[in-house]
Length: 141
Image (cartoon, rainbow, N blue to C red; front, top):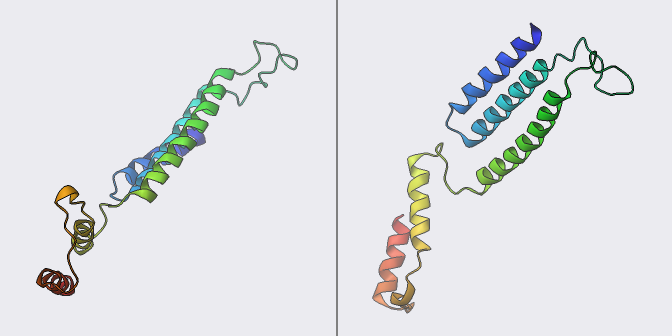
């Protein structure tokens, strides 16, 4: 009964966090759900009242099922790798849903300044009228 309650709390907390907007909350939510599923897989093995699945110590009829334990071990490795990839993507991303509109406008302005013009690019002389207009525009923002 306690394991099922813990599984329910982990999965419910994970679903709640996935429904939020922040990327880190989504990552924590998927991690909580994976922990809940791992506990569910371990609970299916009914290892609490059976002996260890080691052939020298117990008979096969009394041993717990080793397959759910192997599934959980594999799921832990996959979950760790997935969490690492998602955290790396969150750290390297340029934009997030949780930023304000002013931050988005500023990021778009900064990105516009970094645009590549290709063959149509022309070097602007520092004392030209075009350079003066550009400086006045940058000072306004």
